[in-house]
Length: 143
Image (cartoon, rainbow, N blue to C red):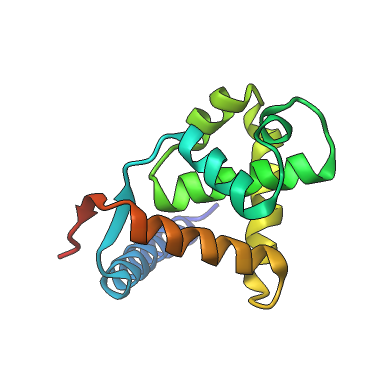
């Protein structure tokens, strides 16, 4: 590798870092404030069980039935987005590994992109219920 190629490579890397930093700053500026709700994972499980009709035992079970897996994914999504819980916390609660829960989380996130899907409607309903019933406990102000 010549000196010119090395300098060009370093410039490209530097430009990529600068662009990434600018994108993050723009996203933060557009995002505004966000809030977390003070709910335990058990509270979210109760709410999801009530709204979906899936029993709490089915959500907490170790089975691979679709209904339970989907409900666990919904709980994980809501815990992450509304309650500020980390995926590891949710994994510990369910006794699952991170890759397993991340897979169901991704499926839920994909389903949510279709605003007409039942999953998307249920998540919106649960999220609005949580926002009404539980006051925010943490708000980060973005400057």
